[in-house]
Length: 230
Length: 263
Image 1 (cartoon, rainbow over the protein chains, first blue to last red):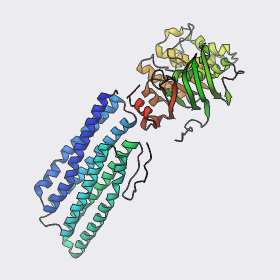
Image 2 (cartoon, helix red, strand yellow; image 1 turned 180 degrees about the vertical axis):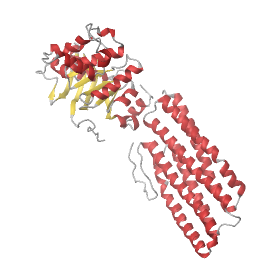
Image 3 (cartoon, each protein chain N blue to C red; image 1 turned 30 degrees about the vertical axis):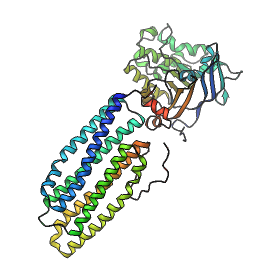
Image 4 (tube, rainbow over the protein chains, first blue to last red; image 1 turned 45 degrees about the horizontal axis):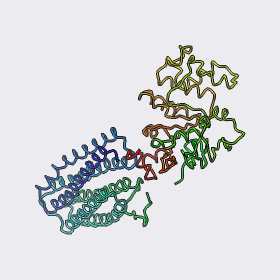
């Protein structure tokens, strides 16, 4: 076996993606809990840590570019680097949503969130976070079948999004003065919904990395019973 | 796996059918079947000893020049087996030209290097025009037009190789075989030849042997990957569009080779 340098550097990059991904996965839940609990300290932390995430993303990209320029990767090596670059980008964008929820939390006045929505928001965040965790596991294991199984869970996130939006609209109908706060909460919920969609993008890149085919997977996507053999 | 042969003009230039090549008792290449698309660039790659050069040389009966060489199976060219008894190998080599690893101009003037092949083939038109158009097609005209009477050896290595390409073009072949045509050249001269090959494919079919995988990736439309079997015979592992070979090879061995993990 040759290419030890390349293999070593690629392994390092994988580890960096997993580290970054784990941090983002935790922050999805943290920022939602902080929003619900009106925990300003954690919300501020979610805003502050976004800079670290951005830096990580750029560093991972640059390291991948360097490998492309110096090692001429092909086949699965090239796909691993392409997936790494794309996934780092998706993680960075998900954390922008995390940060956005932190900002919303700070903007919201002292008023508590409507209780039913608050619980559902947490549930959305928890599901999204678990989806991301599974996507990262599939990435680490280079497991296309596992990645293809993840997007189905997005249905739950979408359904929660619909319910919360309905609740929030009802609140405004009952009390026009609530409009401003409700609008902010609606944005927070939208951020979570988008985060879950970006987890699906990550799944698409995991599949590409593993089997060399890029397959669009929206939440209606059903994993085929048999996978195309490689 | 369906292979799209239509990035050229959809036709085949030449086809190897279950071809084996022997040197005495030793089977150097076994049962290669390969369809080479017309007016496209096909690269033959693989580790040392995999038979890629032998396969290349079979396409214009260059192996005839090796006394012990023997070819089984067929090479079909315009529907005929070029190894059939009634085929004149010299005529085959005129229509299927070859450019070698090291530039090998004759010790004659630049002009004569290009005119030579056409002259012995009884070319009747304007020799000046033929020399100019061949040198233009070989992207060499501007560099040599004022010194056509100088020796071919007065040129740089890269220029000499382009001169050899001009010489090959001058007899108007259909197919040009290239056996590691840039391995003796520096990177800049190499890229010039690669650019030139891209131009040439508009009119000619190119088959190129290279052990520079990045060159195959950069410069070819199709790639055939050869390997050496346990009995040391070369065989074809995978033939596909170059983009597929280098992003998602179908065969495990191809993957190991193109990612630099063996070979």
